[in-house]
Amino acid sequence: MDVSELFRQHEATISARARQAGIVQHAGDRGGNREEILRTFLGEHLPKKYGVTKGEALTKSGAQSHAADVLIYDSINCPVLYVGDTHVPPIEGVYA
Image 1 (spheres, helix red, strand yellow):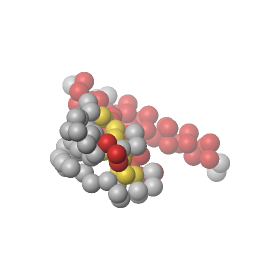
Image 2 (tube, helix red, strand yellow):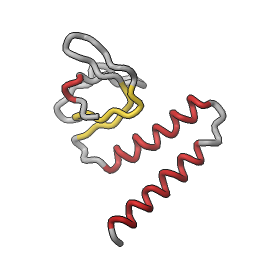
Image 3 (tube, helix red, strand yellow):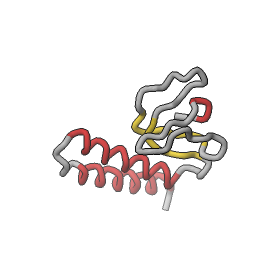
Image 4 (cartoon, rainbow, N blue to C red):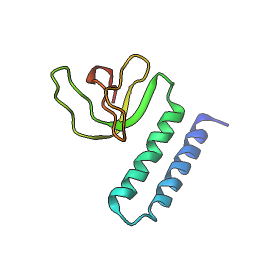
């Protein structure tokens, strides 16, 4: 199997799961379910040094970013200052 075919299969799987999430009527919940599909995919395929969550980044001065549906951070060297439904890591450890 070539890499292009592998990516097409991943794309088809993610698209099918996103369409299935369309059964949920509430737009916020439907979007949240679709965001979770992407976070799960990234968490399974990125190297383990990257954490994938939703959250808000915190600066040294205490300013917080807006909520990010997908947040990629350094899971080895970055402390998470709050762990709940929404994680809050310091901005220095956030990649995307």
